[in-house]
Structure formats: C-alpha cells, structure tokens
Image (cartoon, rainbow, N blue to C red):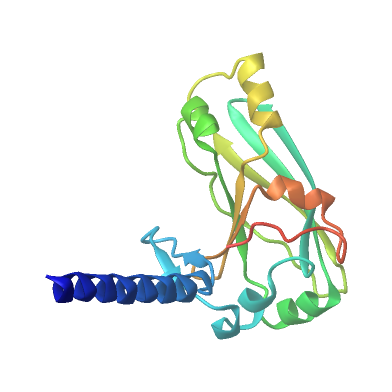
Length: 192
C-alpha cells in the first residue's frame, strides 16, 4: 500500500513537471497570424516573413488619425497613416498592401457585417511618408443617431493588413489607440 501511494505521488510530480514545461513553451510562441481564406490561426514568426510583412508594425507604421462618417447608408473610415523611412524603402520594392477593418460584436450587430470591404493601401515613390485612405462598408438600413454615436465612439475595431494575395499578415486590435502611440514612450500595441 505504501509503495502504491509513493508511486502515485511520484507520477503526479512528473505530470506537474511536464505541464509546467509545456506552459513555458507555449508562452514563448509568437502570436498567431490569420489567413484570410481559412480564418484559422497559423503560427508565424516575424523573422520568417519577407519584406513588408516583416516591418509593417509600429514604429515603422503608425495610424495618425481615424475619422468615421456616415452618408447614404455607407460607413466611411478615413484612415491617415505614416511610414518611417525603413518601411518606405521596403515599400519601394513591394508596395502592394491593403486594409480591412474588423468590427467588434456590438457594431456587427448594428450593421449586419463583420468587416469592411478591402481598400488598397496608398504608396508613392516620390519620398512621401504620410498617406490617407477611405475604407467603406454599406449598411442595410438607415442608422439612428444613437447607433452612429456608438459606432463612432467604439475603440475595439481591428485593422487587418493584407498582402498582395489578400491574405492577412498583420492584425492591430484596438487600432484606434495607435493615434496616441509615441515611439520609446508608449507601451506595445496589441499586434498579432
């Protein structure tokens, strides 16, 4: 009987040791990147990405202003953003990227869709670092003043950045907070 108890204690200690080891390994995994076609997470590492996909995050890319407006049953997300010189140089060689905005559940319930349409990212090879694009989505019925206020005040939108194959390679959760980001001062953004 004593040997059975000792065996159970030893096996439970070994089990705890293995589960701790597994937890440590899982916590060091990089955040997932979503494949647009399957919408299922795929493990990715910034070191394995190429060019634009490897550098498309703060401080190389920063959203500087977001203005949400509504006209003729269409929501317009006017997005102003800037690149640093390093990302700009990469974009000179591979300048195909686009954006899409994912809606929080509360907003999806109001407008009936989970994301905007895809909008091409802007780029000019004349040294310009600041850009602006409008990302649109149609709504089925007129929005009330209160619904529009909820849409404009919500901070939980996701900004998806897509490559030239329209596959998502970067997700900025709560990207509206990016307008307050200051390099070297701000905490990291929630980037996947």
